[in-house]
Amino acid sequence: MNGDVRDVGLASSGWDRISWADGEMPVLRAIRERFTREKPLAGVRIAACLHVTTETANLMRTLRDGGAQVALCASNPLSTQDDVAAALVAEWHLPVFARRGEDRETYYRHIHQVLDTKPHLTMDDGADLVSTIHHDRTELLGGVRGGSEETTTGVIRLRSMAQAGVLRYPIVAVNDALTKHLFDNRYGTGQSTLDGLIRATNLLLAGRTMTVAGYGNCGRGLAMRAHGLGAHVIVTEVDPTRALEALMDGYRVMPMADAVRVSDVVVTVTGNTSVVRREHFEAMKDRAVVANSGHFDVEIDLPALADLADERRTVRPGVEEFRLRDGRRVYVLAEGRLLNLAAAEGHPAAVMDMSFANQALVMEYLAREGEQLAPAVHTVPSAIDRQVASLKLAASGVTIDALTPEQLRYLSSWEEGT
Image (cartoon, rainbow, N blue to C red; front, side, top):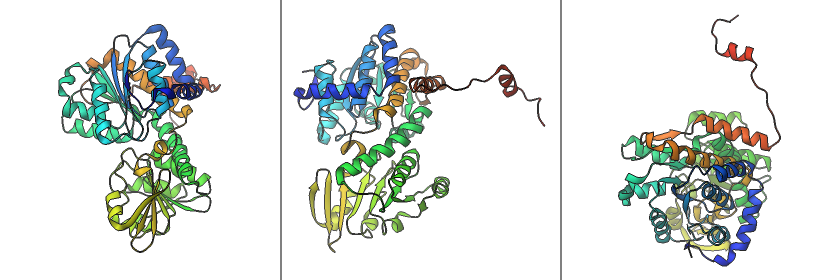
């Protein structure tokens, strides 16, 4: 078997779900059709560290049909869909190293196995792949032309590396493309996080108070969707401008220390560490539910909660009860990991269509021009962003206006005024 998956016998189920997702991804499908004809990635080896989902499978198919040799591992121990991993191995013979629930040692072994393919390009979601190359596999750096990064947390890590002068090859921040973060982060995270919350708990959100920690694009989407289900939404922030936006969008804004006293549900989406910590657990209501939809499992201080608890037990799949010494109960979902992928299926395919279209086109761009780019974090070329938006509109049956020659002249001149 080419890879390390839990059960190759699950391939048939995985194939059915991958095909279903493909039906919701017309932009990526159009790119795959062109890639099949043109083979822009012929001879290129790509190492990918992504959530192993149905949408990711369709991206891997697209890269393969473009001529690339692709190897895939998971970017989170709980995000792998085992039937999808099996289908990629059995149906498309792609090297996949991913098992849902794998421990830390297995997680990093899989990263190294993907890197053993000696990639020309990397594709990351959280920057663990890039970090491993720079720390442990520096012998590969000379052969890497470039890479891409899918998520906010990873871009933050990579910009820190660049600022410190240690980033050794160019990375394109796919997360920062308009057709990624305005839709994937906002609409994808908003819907899929609530999907995970409801699947794990079966809670009715209408009438409950829910705190959203962080008001970036992910937090905006989550707050909007929670409000739409009837929740009373509180936003916590450290950035005054974002806090003001949340206030003017109609939400209550307050410090976390105050929010936890009245919240039934607290969800973190900040990309930072220890957002919910000891003093917050000490002030929470009985039966408060705490979850995270940021990339890493550091936003909720679980060691502090465990230290406060006399007893902990699993009460539902993905729901752990911590009983504090005074009898109050705090429920943590999905081990504090990405709720939308650990307790649900991740973002809907229709929104990942744009994100992964960006990824495919960025791989083509890097294969062509990566060696000419400086070792830094680069933005997605605006032509790619516009192309993805145009393809999505066309697939949706939507047409828009074009500037007239007079309008073009007006916008390029300075003479006309009042």
